[in-house]
Image 1 (tube, rainbow, N blue to C red):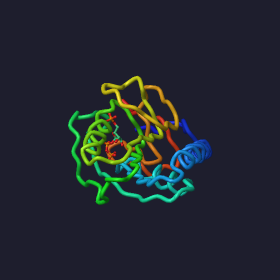
Image 2 (cartoon, rainbow, N blue to C red):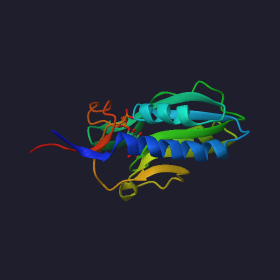
Image 3 (cartoon, rainbow, N blue to C red):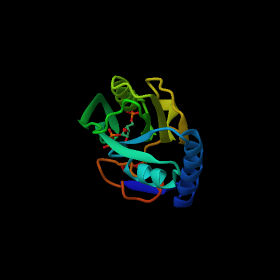
Length: 173
Ligand code: PRP
């Protein structure tokens, strides 16, 4: 198995996270921000993002999964749901990557049933080419081509999440 050179370096990621945080801080001034990380993949992005956001916020999590190695099963399992009451809250779903859109669509629909005051989506990576379900993305870090990537929270079979950068991943033949 081969992890390629960084597609996004630590510096590029941190720079983009700061830019996103600045826009989000402006947009959520005076609001009741609840940042919801979609785990496991978003743990690193969420923790950097919330540290850079400069308005008061609350953090919560959804733990969900649908992938077996590099393929989606198409079925999203939610292992843990938010503990916060989302009514009167301005919810920001924070994802590491939107690929087919199946996971985020499921989480979004589920969250909307709880009737938040507003609901927006922030994803670090957007792999548009693979999209099967159309979802509105409000804040996007980087567009990426149809390549399997690991690092900065993203895994292959639960490995490589701890890489501080994002790299292409290829299985050797
Ligand atoms: C990954 C990733 C996103 C989702 C994106 O999660 O973190 O949540 O897949 O893919 P999609 O747009 O095709 O649904 P995964 O199911 O691998 O669980 P994990 O977060 O524990 O890695």
